[in-house]
Amino acid sequence: MLTNNQNKNQKKPLVTNFIRNLLPFGVRSQQGSTLPMAIGLGSAMMIVGAVAVMKGGQENTNTISSEQTKQAMAAAEGGITNIQAFLAENPALAMIDSSDWEKIVEEPTTKTEDIVKKGNLDLEKKINDKTPTSSNNNNDENSLICKDSPVGANSAKPTSTSSTVSPLGDEFSADEIKTGLESVVGIKLDSSSSDAKPEWVSMGNNQYYKFIGYTRNSNNDGGQVIIQGKKGDAVAQLVADLKGTYQVNGGTSSSSSSPTMVDGSSEGAPVLWVTDSKNNSFGNNNFDGIVKISQASCTFEGEKPTQSKNFEQTTNKLSLLLTKEVMPSVPTPLVTPKKIGAINSPKGNSTLTFPLDATNDPKDSEGRYYYEVSSIDLSGKTTVNIEKNVVFYLTGNMTMSGNPDFVTKNGSKLEIYGGNGTTNITLNGKATAGANIFIHAPNAHIGVNGGGSSNPNIAGSIWAKSWGLSDSNSGILIGKPGTYGDYIVGENRQVPETSTPSNPVTTYDNVGQMSRVTRQAVK
Image 1 (cartoon, rainbow, N blue to C red):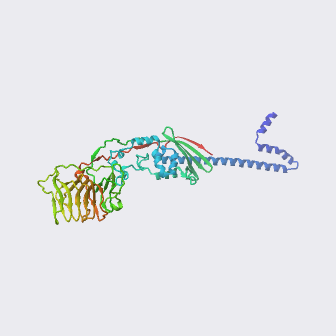
Image 2 (spheres, rainbow, N blue to C red):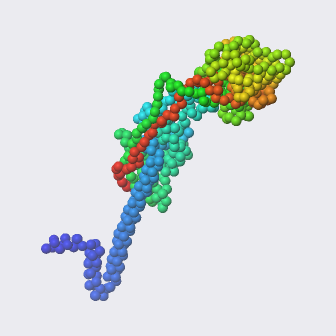
Image 3 (tube, rainbow, N blue to C red):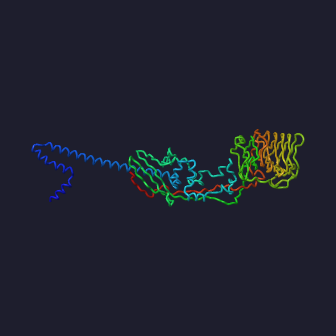
């Protein structure tokens, strides 16, 4: 029984035992001493109060800590929601690890395109397999345009934001991606090291989240993201598996070495087309239209016309076309031309008229009259009236000096084709060739010096080996070229078909959707 009583006393609280032990003092107080009892009771009350305060403080601390941990986790959840939305808007980023995201922030001008283009190896391969190649081979007329050509350059090569080179497609913006990585994901440059690293992103109310990392999984159907949240001293971490798959569909391409040729006669002809890229002199000559220079190798070593000097009066802009297109040879006459020898200026102010004999001279089914001319040498004030459509096949050179003029009437045209022996064509003084004039002499050097009363001096088109005779800027030397089909040599112009290829479309499924999440307190 003594043992049981002792055990019971041991189980009673410390304060109760303490008070119980004070009772003898209370008994003795009846014998004349109350002070010890008062001291004992006061001490007991102090101990009870201290214990209560300690217990209440611990409970309060635990409550605050638990609440901050909950709010820290809420911050982490808010952070992952923001990042999910960001990836949904920029799904290709979900196809690469966050280490590449940091590189975009570090060097956006040099890294962004490469990284986004890369996506991942499988995606890049699919895009390369699907990318239309017609703009890079002979199946597209744009393939004839040299890459440095001011005219047609944009259509000859894809832009850096094209879906043919970027899985983000045409809407991709490097600046917007970088801004989002900084503001939403929190990846920012470290000013001391120039390295990008995640920082805490404020959500207000003293809550923050921090992106720790994103790693694409081995199955290539998603990735794992780690986000931390913070409230006060409490930090919570959220680890989530995010879905994200892609597929590349569509896209037309052709690698055929035999181009599909189509009619190019309706296209606008150049005012000047030359094939020698080394021996041209454009000076201050003005042209109203496209100047076309051909080189199969796209190597242009000589002088080229410039917008500021040679096209300032033109209605066309970006008027230099560098191309691999081969200039066609002189066409075979559709009927046998009438040989008339040289065309020279008669004495005095005189007029020559063509056709010479509209009834009997040879003409084709289109009503064009054909003449073989050994040379043309006009001077003074000679006027050559062209009253029907006339074609000269020139075997020698052509010179116009003084004030001679070709005048086409009633919409008629004059076409001059120079053969192998035509190596020089010169218009000096105030010589003009009027309207609807076409000169095609693939072996000739052609130039215009001075300026006549008409503007342009020649309304039509000149195709030759090279250009240059003077530094004249008296007015537009050549303009109003018409179309290729206006001239015999251009009627049957064939060019590779210009297609509008169908670019591959990269589609993304379930990007950013959570499939599994783990929540844990960090501290």
